[in-house]
Amino acid sequence: ANNCDYEYVNLSELSAEAVYVSNDFDVTYEGWINCGDQVLLTADEQNPHGGTRSMRVENRLSTDDGVSSAKGFYLEGGKKYDYSVFVSHKGEESENFRLTLTYLCKDGETFETVELASETVKAGEWAEINASYKAPKGASEFIVKLTTDSTEDFWFDDFTVTGKKTAQADTVSAAGGG
Image (cartoon, rainbow, N blue to C red; front, side):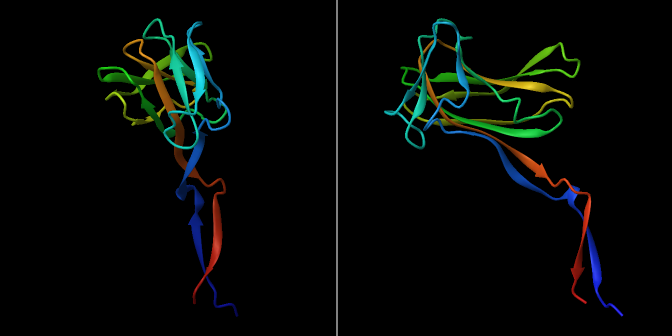
């Protein structure tokens, strides 16, 4: 006779923190591009937040000018993600930074834009902008964008998207002590 007790675990209830996007800009631009034809996006080794370089954004003519990156390959609708980026500027006054997310709705035709976070940052300091957001189920084509309320130059670094990663299998059985 077998005296083993079996314990059934529903793995869909088990989850762990997962990093879906991690952009440190130490080697490449990590898929980030300028928003605004004249905007200059360059790697800056003189002002990194972490690692060896950050990204500098300059020559902005409007508050809509900034940087963006398509992250749809890594993200999906219906899941909650935590977004984080570090920002800095060297203006004379505090600067209000905005992190937005644009996504394609389930209908495949309509784009929605939400402001994930807005943060006032003092000159000469690095500050983290972070927020959690769950786009509707069926959303796709995720694009994050970073701007400020002025046309001042700014820097950004260490952009991450994290969230819960849920196990794929339904159940497993494990021998319990008996």
